[in-house]
Length: 261
Length: 325
Image (spheres, rainbow over the protein chains, first blue to last red):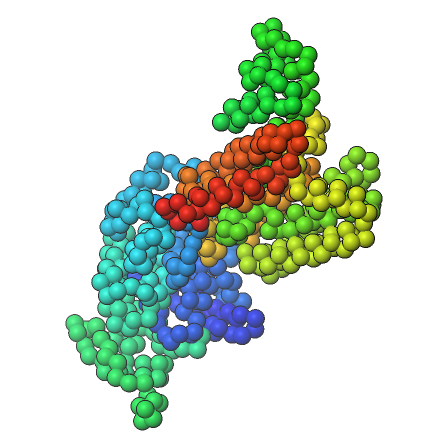
């Protein structure tokens, strides 16, 4: 077991955001977290990486409680890909990715670190942007750069907060293909908050459906993404079809508005 | 470049000394047998000009580095050593000493001591307040601006009740000048800066990472809150040391890091030292102009820095190709 989250609770200024969340993650596994906006997906991911400190519960990383690890130890085992690509302090793509080496190196970057970074840029097909400025490249490319940075960290567990949220359909597929590929090849594991149910269904091994800070359903995509669950959690009527044992979802209409409008 | 400008600067003065004579006067001290020097150039160079120029270099380095650190850590292009209320604190302290004659330490160091203490006081209030709120850049900047107004207002009230002559002196103090240099003071500042800069350099890689956002930095193993407060304290100390001797030479800390980033890009490991050198070059050049432009009147260097720096800065901003602010 790579990662085990046991009954964590988290509240912002006494407003509970996460209640009694438990999950487990195996080697070479992608866990998708789905749920409506504001349901605590991002908060959960930040709690796992200890950017936020849950008030209750434990998180075990390779059997070690992360509260006993220091930041550097956590950073060597877990990589985080943030959601917002808000304007950052100006840096070139290669410098941004090199930051991922921070947990492994001292003040100076070595030849090996640079090789590692170039190798990853090559893998993601963004090597031609290496010298460009991060703020100049497109959203899809930025997302790949952020993933590259997390990969440069050489962590066993990657936490991704909506990696496809503002990408076009091709970049969405590319990013997901890259992720599944890396997870299989390098035997890392990933937790991914994701909005698009069809992408979740197609690319994740298991899905955790959250609603109002609690786990509503968990299991393989077919058992979680059902007409009934989606209706209860999102308030949306959908058709669920099956394609090679993976469900795909066709939205029909939001439930309460159907008669009124 | 620094050596050339300081050479020219040493040679230019009310008493005419040629450039090579200035160099030889400097070297005469170290190698008496190899270089000749006259009594006039000896006195001019060693007692009057060198302390001033060295103060310019040291102060420029300190302000340039501090500015680069603060812009990086607050992720704000407008941040400068003054954003944390250092100038307004120092200005108030000095005014208090000049106008009311009250101070923490007496004697020669009354003004210096006072401005140092108040500069630190002001920034520690800001750091204290913001560390309770999680030390985000936004709280720090807002608290800094609040402090700037508060201490600015207190200075105004002091001046309102002050004697005309004393008010004039206080205003001149705040503009900033390298006049008040001397060897013992120089040793003090150099010592302080020599301690502070290595500490900041060690953190420069973390500053890069924090530029990508607090959350990202945390996930990459940086203790964001502690790093921010530690570097702020160090940078503040350094600036307070400089400002209490020179008065508020404002512009350097804002401009030097920007010019540096435009020239060499955004990696703080290089921006920090280069920005220091840039600050030194800017300051001694400005001082050279300040002394010579309508000689023998010596203009306050603080004003000249802004006069020269602002057009240069605007030119660089308009002309830049890459987005480094």
